[in-house]
Image 1: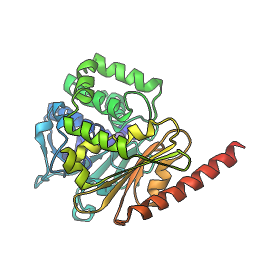
Image 2: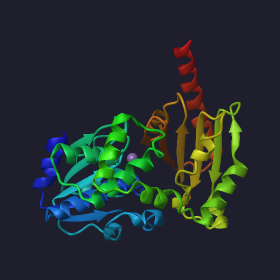
Image 3: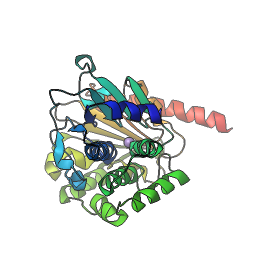
Image 4: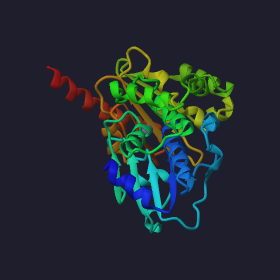
Length: 323
Ligand SMILES: [Mn+2]
């Protein structure tokens, strides 16, 4: 698959590189690295992301300024990165006649592409892209290496979770050799917190609810909370991790009210609970330890009890197995 997907991309004349809405460093890292690679091959490449306000924190990624919320009129191939479902691009698959290539590392990926390179054993989509480029002997510039290193280190929580293994470190070392600067990248990602995000953290720390004997941590962030702290939506990214960090917590739940009044539910687990299963059940997706779904149900009590039921089931199943 690493060969045939690359071949399909290399045979294309004009390629759109699409990342998911409310992008993280992994999805943009893939698209930006590929943009650099394809431009260096004198190919026509475009960067598409449907999000109006892109995360300021990621502006340091090379070629960030070329990301557009409009599709070009003519292109023959659409490559989608880090999306478990096609809908994550905010594009309508039925209105596209182009070839779709799906490159991802989500366990729950629906294989929506004409070609699917889905490898859940990789710690990030950026590592899947890196593997593909290496397998095919493609030249990787310092700019592309920066994007791939950044996406991977961010998706693994700085080598703390996901599918981190020896290969993750070996690949990261190779990217440093290719020109990625780990200190610079870490500073951009870690030491760039706006005050508003601090204020939002304060809200989360003060309002966190512990349920099920402390095994479940719950936070609800409403539009009012964002306004009061001055935080942007991107500031909610990863904030759930401080809830999972609590010693007793196995499952952290964050319910975020979106601008349109719908809800985004993020789930994080620590040891045994497969939250991708829960997210999948409610129409979302993700990884074993990190997943999410969207809900039109606006009663947060109902949402919480739905998730808690799944938590109970997963816990019982786990306890049975370990007896
Ligand atoms: Mn990812």
